[in-house]
Image (cartoon, each protein chain N blue to C red):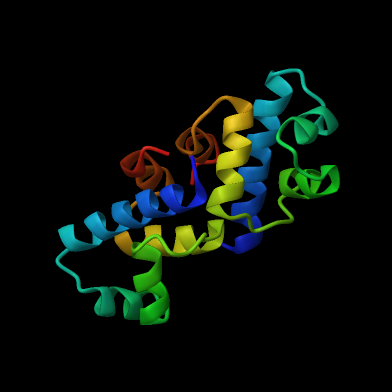
Length: 74
Length: 74
């Protein structure tokens, strides 16, 4: 699978979990203390994020990294 | 959870899957076309790896990224 596809799948999974919580990108990025533009790029699948960043996002969403991978079918 | 702990958990999960396949670090690194020293550092939990790298390792091990996260309890 190409890197862009991996990233898009994971970003979409994060977006779905976030919208299910009724949180805007902005408020969620603030919650996890991440720059809004960076978080937005992650959801669009434009960043090849690290384990540590995945974990920060997953924690903010109240799920495990495994849950996100399962959502993303990765 | 601290970054070092995250990395150690994931690295240990990879090591367990690799040894279950009866593959040396060296032969596995060669298989996935990764520098041996870099792969060794990953298993020791010394690298904060990206999604793309996780996927390369998971593919080589014949599992999903989700499986590795489950093994690592992440």
